[in-house]
Length: 127
Image (tube, rainbow, N blue to C red):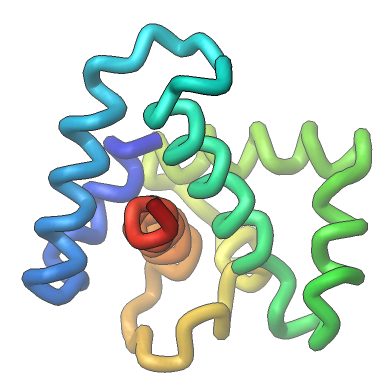
């Protein structure tokens, strides 16, 4: 997922890019296990939470409603397809539309990738 986030690193501020690099350094050492002492698991978990919060802003104002939608079985399949599309850089306009307007200052066209990058940045700031 960090590889996807790095695709828009040129669109981040220098401070955000530095934070993304620090997140990458943290997660590269992660063995993928989730336990109480794992800073890596915390960073990853919060990045996914922040990314899910960044979706569907054009459709629903209420964050709770957005999270209820993304936290259901059918959306998990959609989420997997979205990640695959972002990995291959073949993401449709319809897929990009669910990621729009999470960050009002973003002027680019790679909304989903940018949201993912900013989710990693925000997860590090959460620490």
